[in-house]
Length: 114
Image 1: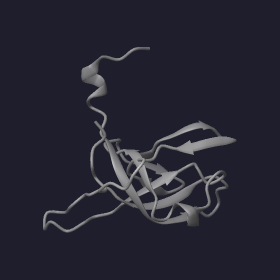
Image 2: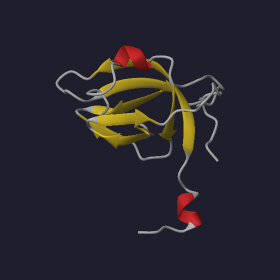
Image 3: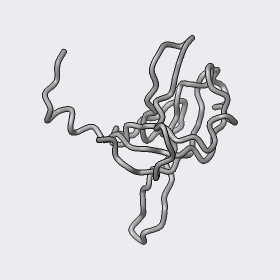
Image 4: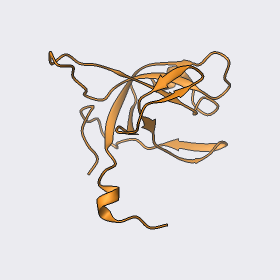
């Protein structure tokens, strides 16, 4: 179903750098990621986000640390297995052949995809 440009422009796609990653206890596929998306608090200090992602069958948590990924940054928070997720990592494929959407060179976390 097609959407118009105004609807599409509401989606905030941003670069995020994975700072921490670990398997979620009790799940085969969920990983808990701590990411830098360039967010700041009122004092101007960096604030990291937690994203819960279902990529744990394909990706080892250790391999994700330091990787830059593309996320949907303005999704409403969602709770998965009691953990709040504040974004969605973009990937292509299916549960057997999955590829993360990543920039082709290093870029500052928080930059918007345009």
